[in-house]
Amino acid sequence: MGEILQIQVGRCGNRIGDNFWKIISNEHGLDEEGKFSGYSSDEQLEHINVYYDESQGGIYVPRAVLVDSDSALLLNTIGRRRCGGNAYRKQNFVGGHGGTGSNWARGYYGSSEILSLIEDTIQSEAERCDRLQGFQLVHSMGGGTGSGLGGRVLDHVRVSYPNQVAHTYSIAPWMTVSDEPTESYNVLLSAARLVGDAHATYLADNRALFDTCCSSGNRGGGASAIPAYADLNHLVSQIMSGTTTGLRFSSKLNADMRKGTANLVPYPRLHFFVPGFAPFTFRGQTDTGMYTISELATQLFGVVRQQRRCTGADTIEAVVMAAVMTFRGRGLETDSSGGIPLQPATGWISDPERCWLPDNLKTFSYSVPSHGLQNSGTVVANTTAVRDVFERYCQRFASMLAKRKLLHKYTEEGMDSDEFRVSLEQIESLLAEYLAIEQINCSGDDNGDKQSFTSTSCMVTSSTVDECKLSVN
Image (tube, rainbow, N blue to C red; front, side, top):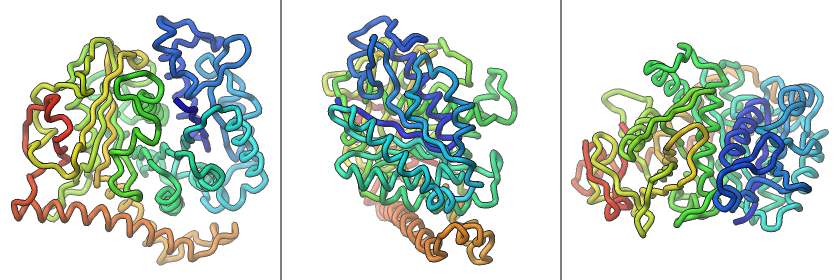
């Protein structure tokens, strides 16, 4: 398989990216020196070149470019230590002098001094690859560096490497965790670029992550009542490990970046995915429990349900257009077609006779377990519930824009005020597309043309696994 180059932008992007490298280094059996010390070279090293570059002496180095507007912060937090046993290439640290003040415009327009360095570093890493398949951007949508500079980097990737795939792991903020007054501007301006520049966006909503940490904390584990950033980052890193499993390990249904999301994207603009991971563990914890496929699947779609935050008599039920479930652990067997026979479950899957999209539920299994877990599962769902996340910021964005609140901070950086209007229209158009799908489904239910998404149980077997329709309440 071809190589993937990860680009980490901003404080949030680098912390999550750094933790991601620690997790997968362990999964690939790399020791503190970056050398292999695992249990099976055939299994753990077969596709290690996808994310790692082998240097002299058999040392594996992460294929990553680390970017921040503040070079001192970048070097102090990451650059002076090892990453899961693997030192980053020091020339791949690209930083500026001073932050962006949580200002999208300063990150996008005011980073010209380091943009050429970023482009040169990306080109240098890309030239090391024999067959580069794509790029993976990790960033926050709320900060000025992750949203603004991250968007500028994504622009460069799409223009300079038009034949490669661009995926992003994008973190949407929430005011309980952080409440910068400019976050609403940053999120919408960033999202508008993701619509056109990314092939797929794994959208990690801090509100849903926060709820997951709190609900899991109630079952024990010694978690604090209010999760810290590190707790949320740990969960995102686990999700990244799970969603990239098919790119790093062999299976009967192995796929590259393009094929892996082909069934998830019904229309090019609707490429925002809701990811989930089970079982949940807090940072520093392990879970030695053995879970059945049904138990993991029930937990995973419980995470998907949490995305629909709006309630009320007029609330339209969210539609899961397509989803992929990945299961990991010893003893998880797939049949000849790659499907996993699931046992009866309640409340997470509906009548299989009709579906929104054909073959809209795919399942995969891999024998290599997640770090610290006996077995685990990951779900990636393309659901109209992501509309709730964007609507949350659209309302605040429109309100602030009408009052021209803090607008001068952006125009002072060379940004045209019309860009705000264009970005808002772009996201409102996206929301209208999601809403239209929900309304069509709702209308179909009323006319008997489509099955309801509220059925409580379904036996999922190898013959029906690709025909079932998912439910989000």
